[in-house]
Structure formats: C-alpha cells, structure tokens
Length: 252
Image (cartoon, rainbow, N blue to C red; front, side, top):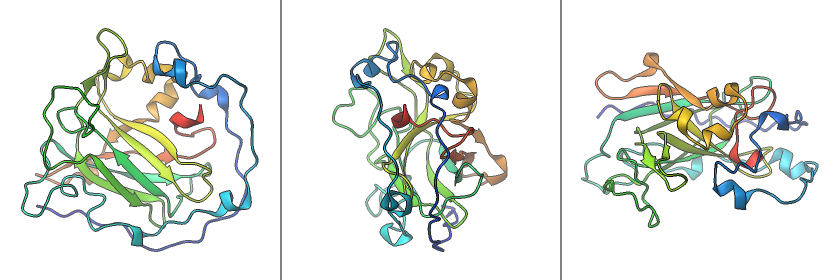
C-alpha cells in the first residue's frame, strides 16, 4: 500500500482580530419546506447577534498531539490489525482552510464523517439495505498545518435514498466539521463531487439560493495529486468568512 504524506506539525499562534460581517442573504433560509427537516429545526424567533469575546477570538488551540497515526486515513483507521483496508474507490481529499483574506488558518481541527462505498452509515438508525463494511468506520480527523492545509485518505461514499420525498436521493457527499481559534461553535458543511448528476436534484442542495455557493461545495478532481494505480485526488478549499465564504449548515 502506498503511504501518503503526513501534514506538517508546526504550530502558529492565532491572530487576535475582528471578523468581517456575514452576508445572510447569500445563505439558504432556515425554513425551507421542500427540505422537510427544516420545518421543525428552523428558529421561530428573530436571531440575536452576540459579540465575540476574547476567549472566542483566541481559542481553542489544537495540536497534532491529539491525533492518532491513522486518524486521517479512513481506509485503515477502523480496521483491526491484520484486516483488509476498506472496500471502495480509494480517494484523497485535500485542501486548505482559508480566512476572508485568502490566508491559510493553522490549528483548525477538521473532522469528517461519511457513508461507506455502498451508501450506508455505520449507525443503528441507518435502515438502507446496502451492506456494512467491517473495515470502515466512516470517521476521521486531522489538524490543519501552518498554511491551513489538510488531507484525508478515504473511499468515495455512495449515494443513498432518504425519506424526504417519494424518490429523493442524496448525492455522494462527505460531512465536514471545523473547530478552532475564533470559532464560537464548530462549523458544519458538506462536500460533493464534481460531475455527480444527483446534485441538482437534492432538496438540501436546492435550499441554497445562489449557484456560486453550491459550486463552492463541489470538490474538483485533482489529477496532479492523484497517486497512480492507487487513489484519485479531490481538492476542497473551505473559506470561513467574507464574500467567498463556504456554505455552513449551522450559519443559516
């Protein structure tokens, strides 16, 4: 098995400064009836803006010491010693976490979770008939390096049906969670794959009002970083704030 490069471990002190205001009109409305879960999850009262405190601007601070050797390699991090790697199309997902000025943000804890290659989660409430993979847990994490870079090795998740409408299917996607300096709570988003025909049919995707925001959630095939005879690569940059801000589900 070809081992992919590990990220740098150099730590940097966070920069203490204010933030650009978010442009709410570019984000999907919290109440979107076509996406049924939003009916009960959307807030019923007006939003309240709370200023950032010093602790929110400067912490928490994460280091690579919290990580295991294979935390960012989902093909092997769940399997016991001697078991085969996870089944499926092997891929590398990499990119950078950027601020509104296009500067890399170091020390961000990036976590991902996803379905297996058949489109099934390792969760007791997942009733899809696709088989489970005994070597795949579907969860990984890493910490961004000095330039805001991150990298995961995994398998491409399969699409799956969900009980939103009569024939609704989720496109292949990976969930991302970010937690780091200046984030009052973790930020959650989803990454889709370039060329997936299910993207324009997904009610969750269609709740996003601007095509440019949908496009910001689509990872591009990156042949330059593909490992020959092993794994294709996809690049997915995440912008925290500003006009190019990525769409985050818990910022609506």
